[in-house]
Amino acid sequence: MPQEKPAARPAPRLATGRGGLGSLAIITFILIAVAQYMIFMYVPNDATLGLIQRIFYFHVASAWNALLAFTVVFGASLAYLAKGERRWDALALSAAEIGVLFTTLVLITGPIWGKVSWNQWWTWDPRLTTTLILWFIYLAYLLVRMAADEPEKRARFAAVFGIIGFVDVPIVFFSIRWWRTIHPIVISWQGAAMEPSMLRTMIVSFVAFSFLFLYLLVNRLRVEVMQDEVAQLKERLQ
Amino acid sequence: MSFLGKVWLIAWKDLKAEFRTKEMISAMLIFALLVIAIFAFAFDPTREEVRIIFAGLIWVAFFFAGILGLNRSFAIEKNNDALHGLLLAPLDRSAIYFGKLVAGLIFMFVVEVVSLPLFIVMFNYAPTGSWLLAAAVIVLATFGFLAIGTFLAALTANTKASEILLPVILFPVVIPVVIAAVEATRGIFSGAPTADFITWFKVLGVYDLVFVAVPFLLFEYLLEV
Image (tube, rainbow over all chains, first blue to last red; front, side, top):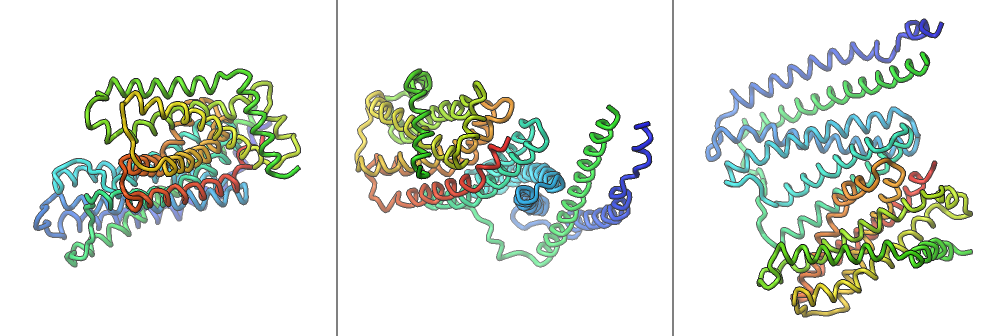
């Protein structure tokens, strides 16, 4: 008897979601392809840094995605505490995982670029230090999620930590700024002198990465929704 | 009973329990001294460079010892389901938090007051500068560390593997306190003019305010069972 029920329940949200996701996938694919073309074919080699400068378009766009993701974590955490709805928790988790992924990419691409342009892999520059701490904070967020057993408790604790972590970021940022202005080793990228073709490439790569973020987020959310449905079905079978 | 009275009641309960066993405070003290002994082996204490890193060494010792205390703060209430008893008491949830915070502050101050002179003697370090300012940094930094530490200890106490989780989630969040405490202490001990390190007092002040306000707003979400 209970086996029939799942089949009779076709999960409408997912069915309708797929069409929209398909077009989102196509748009993202085209945008990323255009961005790749511009990065590797259209934009000229940098005069001083040469080929390696092209990593910049991935690096900055990844950093932007990480920022976007952690802001979503914060917003979703607040919404979860206010409303207590599971979907906000799923959104926070999905965004946090994507944020950690892109922060990791930033931390990998950055040193490669730094080795060529500054002749060292890592400097304890405020930007670098804050990014590293950001990465630690959101790894901790994922650890908090792993450590709590009951789904409701896990969601609540994660939401609380998601808020704390986000509040801490500006404090870390400013404290490290002040620290390093006392020891002046600041290497900043005030990109005033940017070639128009480079600027265009960067904007396209920003837009492409933003769509990639959205695509990954929606997909990750779908996985989460499906997991919930599987859990529900299992419960019904028992 | 006033809010502060309730806070003190919780703190007093913790202090009394600790006074009877003395197991936590002695462990924290011995641990702080061990950290310093390890540093003495790792960095030759007779060398001039040690003067530069002395402020960093003492804060590493204090924060590591503090973690030991924090791990016990809420975990101890899980014995005999005492946490339920606390939650059933006619108190605001935030009174529990502040009570635990006050007790933690007293434990850590004891550790700091006893061990700091020992560190100075063992490293043959001659601090110059105002002792009043040094005391102010110690109070502000310890407060910031414990304000967020007590809060996250309440969070981890309700999870599996809480002793492992607490340092991993606390240290990234508490980094501004670490930087500010070390830089301010170094400035004071080396006799630098106040203008050189006053920024770090501001960082500590902002951090303390934020991380008392945020737990105050969010604490009840951690103790709902």
